[in-house]
Image (cartoon, rainbow, N blue to C red; front, side, top):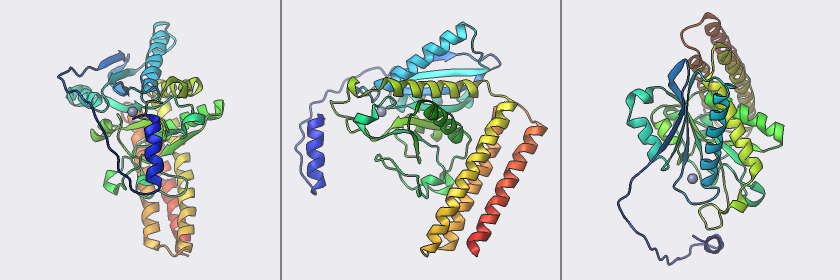
Length: 351
Ligand SMILES: [Zn+2]
């Protein structure tokens, strides 16, 4: 649709229902579905991998030449650093360029053995916006956490919108806070706004999650030019591309060479994130109760976050091969601290 037609339609819809006459010219023909796969093979655990995915089939500059381009830059730079022996990867770094969702899903489903080694999946989709022109900020769409059930406080859905999830659909994992932390650091460093949104779906992170592989989305929303003929190169920011590429590649390098010390560091980060999150949720619950909200409902919310972070702390084990006493003790201590924190909060709410 042209940007003009888009604006006209929006203006009309703001005034109520409207009718549109749409003339569509289309062509259906047999074609091949192709995917480009690039790997930098890991040295010690080559079967374990992180997969980046950028879809090629949408024709806009931001959606999704930016994802395709940033990913190409990341792959080229990583290959160069690898050849110059400046980086060493324990696990394999994989890049996919293909049809949105379809290519990623095939990569996961068509080789069961390969799929068991995919530890993380990250989708790059609309990652280069010049937000002064396009509107919405950079977003990290989180794996399902309780903010996708109880969306409150600073959590909010993008204009894309999301369904209310159930507790059974939660995906507790350190990947959320690990990526958020890295991107926030890049944001502080370069004065770049980084926000998050509860799970919504609809891009290359969903096939990973469907296969029970930790996955999230790097994107922007909303972009007033998205899916219109004005999604052109002049809406793309070099600085944004650099920020996304740098933080994504740095995160990948850490994960792909992670060991016990990484697991302990990530656990620390999770503990901080859990404490901050529970402090926020406690205040929101207190405020809700002051407005006569059900006590049981508030307890349910706090318990959901406790459970999510309890399980998330458990997941850091996958950064280290084998069992380890120090790591076990640290995880148990973190879980214990979390438990007593939430117990105290519940006690205070009861008063
Ligand atoms: Zn897209």
